[in-house]
Image 1: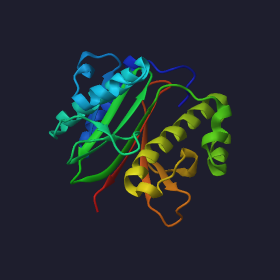
Image 2: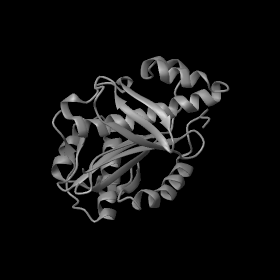
Image 3: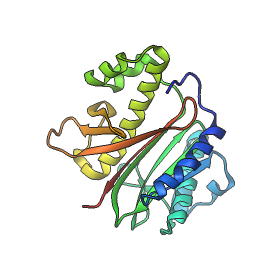
Image 4: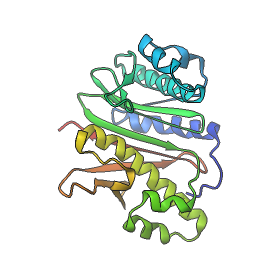
Length: 233
């Protein structure tokens, strides 16, 4: 992966639509929405109150995320209701009987949902903008920086940084659903390392805690999408 400029949303959408059947084969439903789509304006009273209090730019990403979530829930045959926030006001509260995760980047929102009888937690992340290499110290631990340093040049290093950041973001969301109050508070506190087929993520402050398997896919030049799914025991 070699991100140099922001990814093309049209190519990203195509890549995500090609990826959707892969997730569907595992009981995960993926849906996409663009900022400003008409359907994004169709929401319940609770969502309307939340949106009306937001800055116009934040309102657009909020509604697009809810639009993507509604589509994903419909695809999965799960109840479609107002999607508010969990206590704390940061993570979306999906309808009873479902679990899900949202992400937004570059004018696109993506949602992944599943039946709560099969999965207890999901985390997804879409990244369409490159990260400056100078930010590595803010999000990576020593071992991850060593892997970054092995990249054969600045371009590939940027790709690795974006991949690591996306994987950490997906794991961060899933860990919050799995660990609750014990979840990491910063993505830097999540340790990740490459393994066959993806990445292994752990909460570094919990040496005996659970490990998550996070997968990553390129979604066109300069873009990545990652997801983690934790099955019900």
